Structures are given as structure tokens and as C-alpha cells.
Image (cartoon, rainbow, N blue to C red; front, top):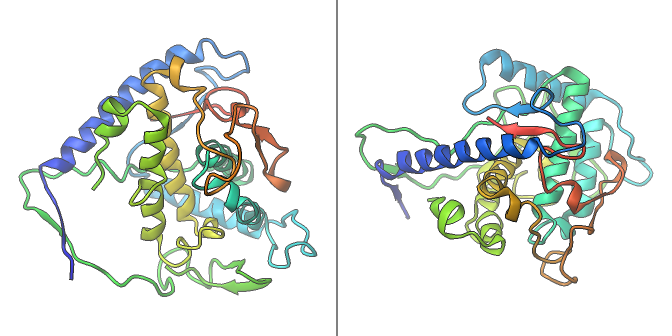
Length: 306
């Protein structure tokens, strides 16, 4: 049996490090937005707020997810028999693009635009925003070493807002499969020493990385790389991954915003991506180029992290 220990003194320092970098990012992004010519301004920009949402904000977000999961979708059931709702539309096109947008140069730009479209759909349906809770800023004062014993996890969700009687997922490996949900990071390498985009993506998309580890924590549905957006937690996890990328870019916007890396498929089988490489989104949106998703305050995108 393995017991993992995290120093109670180290965790607050990591949180402070992120906060410092985020403050620098916000300063730089305010300067950058002055140069944007697509309508995103200080007055129109949306903010994904830091910290724990209020009870009212949580309920509003949950209600918006319900609305999206009850609204009729646009995916053809002849093509995808399991698709029924607008929520399913988003899951379908993640399934179809999985082998192109993971462990590849499309990972971050695809998921940035993808999460933005999902948040846009929530706002249009019910006015909700994706709450951004920072799982890294853990404040502990003179406490003992934290011990995290192994846990079995898994099993159905029996309490809360996403029990089978309130929320069903429908897209399994084959056809229509309605069912209920089942359910040591050193950021200094990202924000100071490690300024190369290849190394940054390894932290977000490699063995033991922030992105992949989040999927393991989600449980059964989260471990299905293809259909993991079926779990509403997926969108919060990817907003957090996007936040890290955004803060990294915001340390030096002039040199980092247009940096791209990697190939166009999982496993490095394609030529390297460029700013003109295409992001395919099916019925959710017309195709976009990577250059449309490299900056969160340009083009269709207009948001920052609080």
C-alpha cells in the first residue's frame, strides 16, 4: 500500500506562486487588450472568477447544465444513435476528434475553443458562466504533513445534483446507452525556468500531468478519454488547464501567444501543426484555425481569469 505525503509548508507556496504569476498575467493582458481590433474590450470582457462560487452561483450553473441536457440537439441520430440533446452535441464531437486533439499540438487550442463554446451555450440558455475554482491554492497554517491514502473510487453517483434521476449520460461505446454518472505539482517549472512550449505541454499532457491526472480523479467516466465530457466536472477541469496555459502565455504575451508545437494527431503521426491548422467542431461550430484560439481576448474569444 502506497501512502503519498505532501508537505504542509510546500502547498501554500505553490498557491502563492500561482497568484503571483496570475497577477502578472492580468497586468499584461490588460495591456494586450488595447491592441485587439475584434471588439473585445475592458468593458466587454468576461471573467472566470477565482475561488469558490457562492451557493447561488453553483445552483445557477447546475441549472444551466440541466437546461443544456434537456434541449434538443442537432446531431443526427442516424449518424450517432446515442445523441439526444444539445449537451450530447458537445460529447459527440469530442468523441470524434479524440485521436486528433490529445497528446498533440491541437490539445490546448482545441479545448480552449471547445470549452468557450460550451460556456457560450450555457450563457445563451440560462446565463451561467463556468465557475473557476483553483484546486492548487490550498492554504494550510502550521498543519501536519498531509497523508493521502489510496482509495477505490468508482461506482454510481448517489447524491448531489447529478444522480441518475436528475442527470443521465447517453453516449457509450455503442449506440444509445442511457446511464448514471460514475464516478505533487511544481508550477515553478511552468512559470519561470521552463519557458519552452514543448516542456509546458508535457506538464499538461504527459505522464502524471495536470490534465491527465484530473481525468483519473473524475473516476469511471473521466477515464473514458473519448466520452469524458459526459461528466459535467470535465468542463471545470479543462477550464483549469486553459487557465494554466493562459497564465503561462500571459507572462510574455509578445513571444508566447503565437507559439505552436506538436503534430495534428495523437502519437506524432502527422506533420507539425501551424497557426493555420484546422480545429474541427462539427455541428457545434464552423471549423476554426489554431490562430483563432491562441489568445483568449481576440476573435470570438473575450474572457480572462480572475
